[in-house]
Length: 331
Image (spheres, rainbow, N blue to C red):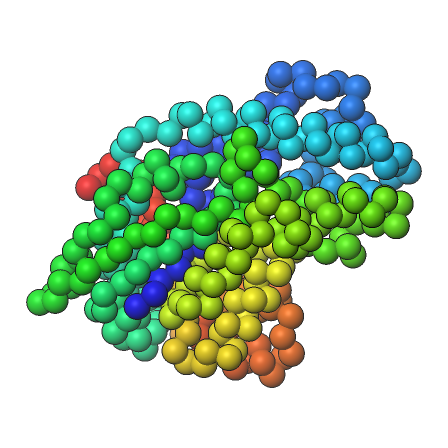
């Protein structure tokens, strides 16, 4: 089996790092970074508007009379300061967590999670997949090197009943660049910012699709799409399913649609605690499943009929038992 795990910021948060945008803004404020900068001042005055930095940057160009040169300068300052802050957070990572150990636990906990939330049929399907030799690829939206630091051994055996499953881990693919190297920060497409006021060069870097396709991270994008399309199972962990990465959700929806029942998405809903999933009232339980699936389907770009077709290929997961440093420390 080819399993691809797509990590968002939830992975670093589970490792105990303060890597959210509000964390970054607090650091900016405490360190008095560029007090006269227009965007920095707006973040300080209206932090509620900046929960998603990338979307907020685009919206700021519509809602304010801006000078393009000043905006571009501020945008570049933000990237440099975000890089500095995340380097500090990255340096806090200890050695308590092993991604290999967590993958081993994953082979048991996914099936258990599906059973506990009433998805018995899905559990049987995933059991079949997880009984096969498995190549695990990682696609990460994070700039940090936390995955590399927790990688350790890259080949090991998982005992599944009477079977032994060989697992191979592959090096992570950083589609948005890494700290100190070509960080990609921006919007999904030109509808998400006031593109007409900028020169032709700025969108090449501010629009993620153009940046990833035309500049230094193009090979990483190609690698990411290649492993996604060669996978049988995708596990989306700690991703917000936000608009600024919409191109990926559309590609994954396409992969589900044309791959048929053989393609599965394990969708981890970190906002819904396990205890809120009813094990008694089937209607309430299925409503939870559908709410989780809808978060992805609304970003799919598919027609309503095609959304219904792929819905059965999306298996929701809940709780905090995945890639969790507190759980790792107990074992």
